[in-house]
Each structure stands twice: as C-alpha cells, then as structure tokens.
Image (cartoon, rainbow, N blue to C red; front, top):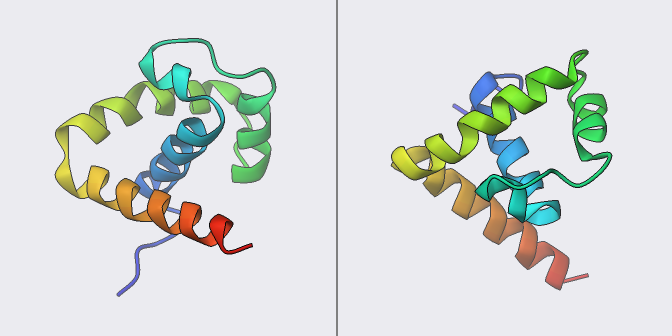
Length: 87
C-alpha cells in the first residue's frame, strides 16, 4: 500500500529534498534561500510559513536518526537526479 501523500511524514520528506536541492546550507543551520519558505507553503497548501520553519527543524533530526526516513530520502533524491539527467 503506497504512503498517504498528505501525511506529515511525506511533507517532511518533500521539505528535506527541496532544501537539499535549493538551499542545502539551511540543513546545516544556515538561512533558507529567499522566497523558498513562501513557495513551499504555497505548493503544500500550508497557511502559516512557521509550519515550514517548524518542519525544517525536524527534518535533519529525522534524517540523522531514522533509517527509514533517510533511506526514503536517498531513494527519492536519486530518482529525481536520474530523471533530470535523462532530460
């Protein structure tokens, strides 16, 4: 059974990958690229940008401490990169 795309965990995976691609320094405590928080809020249909900020604080911890989470991230990132390379 595929995961529910509306789940909080799936949202956090999406946020991690977007940060990894477009603002990697923010995963190490740096500032997020200007406008990225607003765009993620819009895409995810989240009213409050603080929800994105709160989730950003969690994603590094989840990646470092949960093998299932980091494994999914690695798989998704590899798929994205491979598909971009095929364009």
